[in-house]
Image 1 (spheres, rainbow, N blue to C red):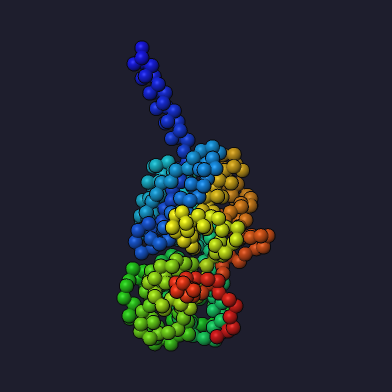
Image 2: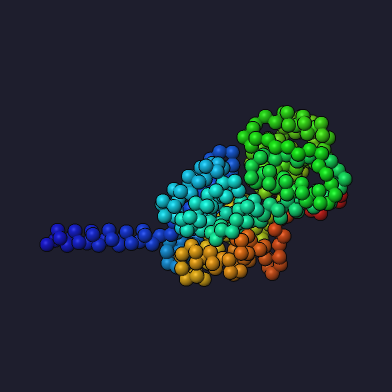
Amino acid sequence: MTRLTTIGLALGLSVAFAGYAAADIKIGVVGPMTGGNAAFGAQLKQGSEQAVEDINKAGGILGQKLVIVYGDDRADPKEGVSVANKFAADGVKFVIGHFNSGVTIPASEVYQENSILEISPSATNPKVTDRGMWNIFRVCGRDDQQGGVAGAIIAQRYKNKRIAFVHDKTTYGQGLAEEARKSMNAHGMKEVFFEGVNKDDKDFTALVSKIKAANPDLVYWGGLQDAGGLIRRQMSDQGLKVPMMGGDGMADDEFASIAGPAAEGTLMTFSPDPRTNAKNKAIIDLFRKKRGFEPQAYTLYSYAALQIIKQAAEAAKSTSAKKIAEVMHSGKVFHTVLGDVSFDKKGDVNGYVVDGKNKDRYVLYVWKKGADGRITYVEAPAAATH
């Protein structure tokens, strides 16, 4: 009798634990966790982990705990699709990622087929949201917005000067360079150089020689921090002292680590930095002191993505991805570490409202040496035309 009772209790417990496990909400966190872009994968991972920890401490989402399932796409579209299929097989309901636009676009199609909602903290190419898909959102801006800002800044600061463009041939890098060039052209300026390089190259000697021959006053880089840092350093090493400008793909201190002293003075467009909002002091201190991680660039954008999923689920009174997406498309305002945000029908963020004021989607930064001797990016002051 005792044995039967024990067996019955064991079965009861196994059913109870199975029910608890089934109630967990699986969150896929994916990006380039290894390889040249791993610094950005770390940002997505750290931001998502802290958000999940904080949400679970507060009771989860509608009483259900969040569990992270990790994926490493290595910044490769094929790997991204492979991870997406694995997430679908594993029962993932929501995805934070991918980092790269060229990976996000094909992976999002797998997610749509499997009713998985995806929020990218960082994929900026217009095609990410221009395909009319119900399941894809982003909390960052778009390259046609960023490129427009960059082109206008170039036209203002380098009026009638010689501008060279270099890109890494990726969906993001080439797309951003083309948008910046288009905007600059619209302001009446014509580039003197426009060329692509392979993103995994290490020796840019020939490229720098070509750029020197074009005699530019500014080199615009469409690409990420690793190759961009190498180009910046090799430009300096070969005596090409003109400044560089780039986009959000450079927004990690690894750029300065790679470029060395040559990083100082580099210009960069990036979304508003939530670290400058005094209301975020507690969460920023948590990252720095508890996690030992500087929450730069897309760290807090990843954190915000999970805040949005929680608030949308509560508004929908459901954890259904489609019902949550409907709430997100409705224009509802979400309160996040980025400020108050809402989405349009495509899934693009409408902007950021902080303390009742609209923030620009893209801001100009400059890489500058601080009192501690470390070179990092800070918001650039207004400057006179060169």
